[in-house]
Image (cartoon, rainbow, N blue to C red; front, side, top):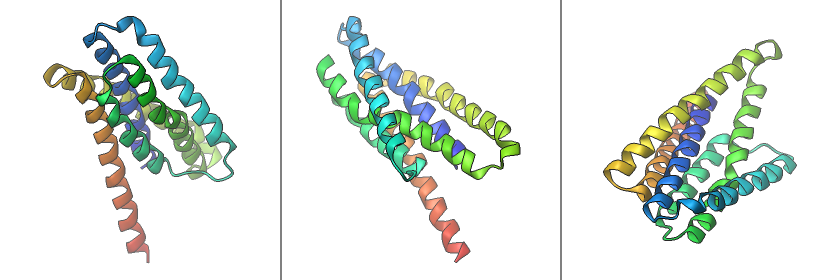
Length: 175
C-alpha cells in the first residue's frame, strides 16, 4: 500500500504542477508562475519541518487523502493571489506525505533489503509523476485548467479510500 501512496503522491504533485502552469497561462499571467510555486514549495518546507518535529508518525494514507482533498479547491482560484493561497494547504502536506511513505518503507523492510525497497519506492513515485502530468494535461485539454486540480485530487482521494477500506478488511480478517 505504501508504494501506491508514493505513486498517488507523485500523481498529485505532477498534476498540480501542470494545472498551475495551465491556470496561469489561461489567464495570461504565466509571468507570475514563480509566485505560486514559491507559495506551494515554501508551504511544503514548513510542512516538512512540522512533520519532522512530530514524535509519532502519521499514516501516509491519511496525509495523501488530505493532500488530495486540499488540492481540489485550487481549481476555484480566479487570480494569482487566490492560487497562491489555495496552494498552501496542499503544499503543507507535500513533504510530509513523501517523508511518511519513505519512513514506512524503512519500518517495513529489514535493513539488508532496504536499498531494494527504496528503489521500488522511487519507481512508484516516478510512475505516479509519469501518470499525473498526462492526466492533468488530458483534463486541461478536454475540460479546462481548473478541472486538472479536481482530477488529480480526486484520484488521490479514491486511492486513499480504497487503501483505507483494504486496511479495514485486513484487520477484520485478522480478528
